[in-house]
Length: 361
Image (cartoon, rainbow, N blue to C red; front, top):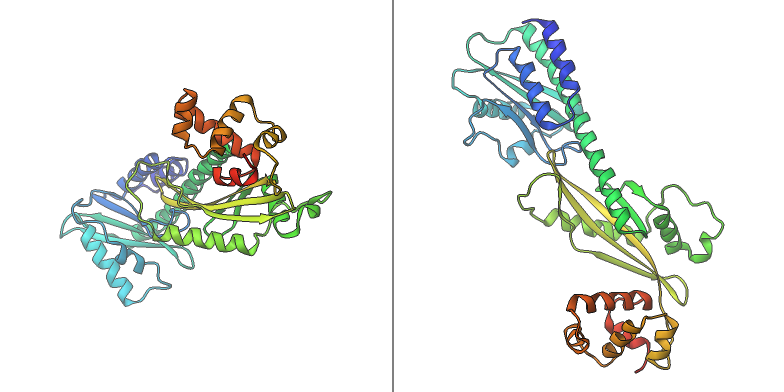
């Protein structure tokens, strides 16, 4: 074995920024040890998206991967005889042949976070020098994997915010499942401050860069996390949102004519490193007209409805469905639904029933 070749391969490994390239570079490192099989096992961790992950080469594919229950035992604090026996059993299960020599390298990243490197080869058993070198390889490999996962995580978060910020210009905040704020915009900070202190509190006030969530938002976040944990996710391709979960809605009056509307949902994203959940929080300041207008025509003038929107509104006041309105006006159902959304937004209400309650025919 040439240590200089190993150093070059480790340097090459550290430059990789995609999982397939990372695996190819890892194969070069393992070739130095003359291995016929190897496996890298990453139990559930923050950096691996909360999923068990195994990268392997040369191990039998059928019935070779350990089950969830077995892997969860490897995250226990410390190692006892039972854990050691479990690792030996896994090594035997992953081994390409019954006569292969196996060397198991344990890398401790944090108090409850471990990763494992299984090395297999025929012929001569592993020497002490080779085991020492393999420990160094394992530590370096684990650091590279953590950096790789963090870069991919950051890449997703940046892209996600660009997308959602363009679609949703009001208050926006993203939390991890520990309810730590990863991102929040000015609108969200203002709205959350108003939520607890009222509209007057935000005038001429320098708001903190990151806010503390009110208790009802905390409860909504807990509910969203609970819903996420109870769900089973379908098999989908990588790098796509696999679900946004049900909404947890919040609402509080700010003044006699305004109220703040908020929503919390989980957003689960599957990348090549596993499923990673977030909490998506959105807020919106709405205007609500408390008094009932004398007539719909007067109300329509007050909220500046267009001529077509007034026609649609008149038919809504008569109790017509969207499909019937489309037939009556001779336009598509999609067009009518768009008009209805605009009318509800201008009126500051959520549905047609609330619209009807605001004014008389």
